[in-house]
Length: 540
Image (cartoon, rainbow, N blue to C red):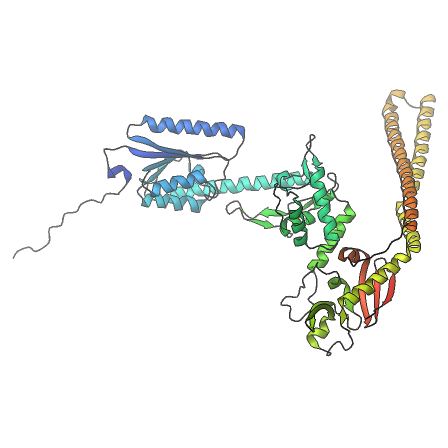
């Protein structure tokens, strides 16, 4: 019987690599090198690597140089920002490179996932990667284990370096060393002594922002004003946005302080930065440099920011619990119903083809008389006239107010340094007595004079220091007295001036008035800042 078994001849598989696709042409070899920092010694290393790979590739007859790709000062934990690396990968995909050579796995990538991903991609294209330090050729090895192992070591090294850098930064923070990003900070530049120096023109812009905000303008309004006036941002642009204004208003550096570690990097692989909400310690250095705005102004701005951000909703139609600050009309913030305590809202009414503004209690608007049974609707023109009358009446009491203000300022300026001066004088007497005691001890032979030289020196140094402090305190007391004289002179001028508000001004009203209560359709109670209350009639 005939044998019907098929005659099968096995042809060994050939790995389709650049090396066996064409044995008679040179391999197009690319080199990749990278330095981790931009320091001068690393720059020299970068040049050396380029020279080394140029010579290595050109010395081999079977190789031809396809390019040297080098990234300077770029982290190896992510490939996203490594432009030369990405360009090399694109050329590999376009079949313009046959082989890649690099110093080590840590130079190729310090992220195990990225390292394996790109090695696999190139291997699928028939392109090998030679890692010189580890003596690995990805086309000839049978397992990815060694690459994964070395890649893990490289990643661990990056994580260790990242931790060391973070530790070094925190140590510097504890020692009060403040890093300044001057290119992002309006109002300051690096001075000749290395410390922050105020830039007068830019500082004027910063102060204007703080003043406008306290005058009741919204951040968007302030940004628009600065854009129209052609003021420049920290980056030299003349177009302002509310986010820029917000960052300036919140930045403690303008009060002379520095808060460090406001953000932190989650890990060295993703480089994700998060706001520090207590996950890491923060470090506050007070009075670190010259302030652009005084601390009282800065604190008032922070309080106003908190007030605007925490506004309660005033309508059931509001989706969130937070209301929205309006800078357009001062009365939106000040006018409240005397019956139910709900704020008033501005509306436009039409009558006989005419349009006019009125103010109505929001509770009455949205719920009728269910919760508020007695809240009048007031015409804006009549309302503003009544408020102007009250303000001018308030100005009419300026003599009394001036005396109260003068007394209050005087009490603030009265320098409480007299007790300190008395304390210093008492200590100076004690030092003088101690010196006499030491002289008496030497005269009686109870102690060698040489042994007491240190004690005499300590007493002398303390005495000189206390005398300087005493002179400083006296100078400050003289300044306080001069300032009080100037205040007295200014108050006398106020008494002689005729103060009267002719037009309703939102900014002035916000500065003067704390609250306006609608008592009835004929009466308002205006509470001024400082607690003074004025009742005024509404004349229809």
